Image (cartoon, rainbow, N blue to C red; front, side, top):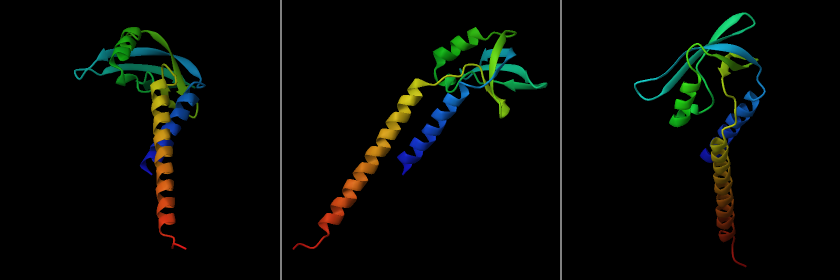
Length: 138
């Protein structure tokens, strides 16, 4: 049951990643880009949608988990730079700079899905074997 729940969760997250590829984009400005004391990387930017100014700090899904890539992003998005910001048309406060499908994430999703299917298959086989063994001999 836990594996099936994980498969559903990761499937939903994978669909959200694909959805972000078609989000509209506007120009924005990088306000700050720096590495914190805890070796995490922060990129703050602002953008305007329909006259409302929004602030964001997301570069891409799971970008902070990969420190070398995050460090490159900090160097790429320097303070004052003009950037393209992708935003959710239904909720413009949700945004990111680099919409993409994270392939390691996709592989992990497929692994979880395979584990869920395997667990279900083992459970069905075990349940049927137990049922067959409990039948009276003829």
